[in-house]
Figure 1: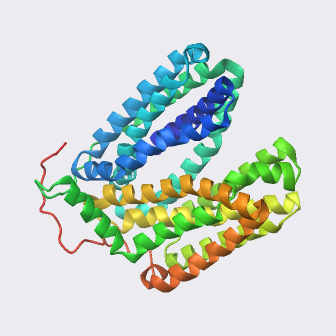
Figure 2 (figure 1 turned 45 degrees about the vertical axis):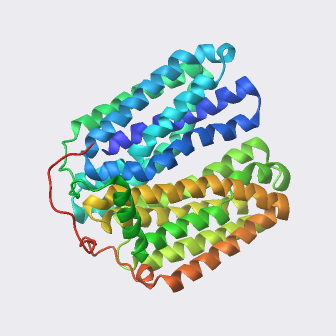
Figure 3 (figure 1 turned 30 degrees about the vertical axis):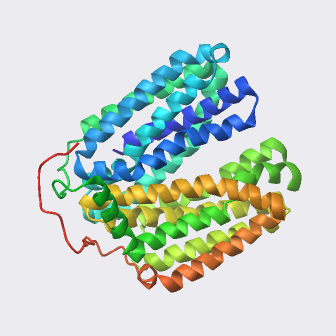
Length: 408
């Protein structure tokens, strides 16, 4: 499962960079890049809750085999069409991205839910750190790999390499044995299942509180979208410096995630999570005030460290605090929070920078993040007291009857 996740992430990041660069080379229109993100995000987010129910009613391994197969076919189509795109147009490429977004709507809830079935419950916390570390490393290497391949063998070669990586990922998932289909209420309408999943999240402070922290910290405290402005106009370090700035948070996140594989947060995880988000806000404030390149890099590394801590804890929380037959829907809700924060965060950063000025918008966002932490700590005492060493399942008030029936 770990190798499947790494190869899949490497492939998807390489495809994303190759596709973005190819589309811009064809159109020379920055709006195309914004359209690219929306074309994939809209179907993925629209189907997330539906995909969560499907993941909770079916063999999750089979769902992943199907969605990765779709990715394999799309990568092959990218490779075959790439030489014709400059003359035949970009809409076939965008159509393939839309299909990938549809597949994501089902794979995003199913993947973490299936991973939790593969690993014994008492090892989920450490396994979460390993998954986060591997995913972060692949997210760093994927765009670099895509850039090197594009420069050396062209867009078609880059897509072909992604096709091979996805075949490896598909083979790895096929190698993992199927796990039992989760329990569910036979004949229950999909809408009712969605409502049940939403109610489960809302009624548990540790879940809704951790998701809200992630949403608002990224929404108000994110500075990634504005880094080109800092590199060009504020720090005056050019594209080379921009590359360092963009990489700095990932370096910090990867370092702390690797540490967490040996020393996963358990006791006092709730307080650690709140402290990490507060540290993230403070680091963003330092970055907003800084006019020194080295201080700015250090501040961004610190944001990565604190964000890495919160990612490990939030991932483990989703695995440990939801029963197996709810994990698909819980991960679907979390995915919507993350997707909304990423998409809206970039938009909010641009609007705030336009209205307030770039640097001011960043350090004010850090202040808002600190306020959000304080409000969450006050309103969610259960999150504040959360302890991840307790591996007992957090069951709903009424569990569905056990069944082996499989519903499509």
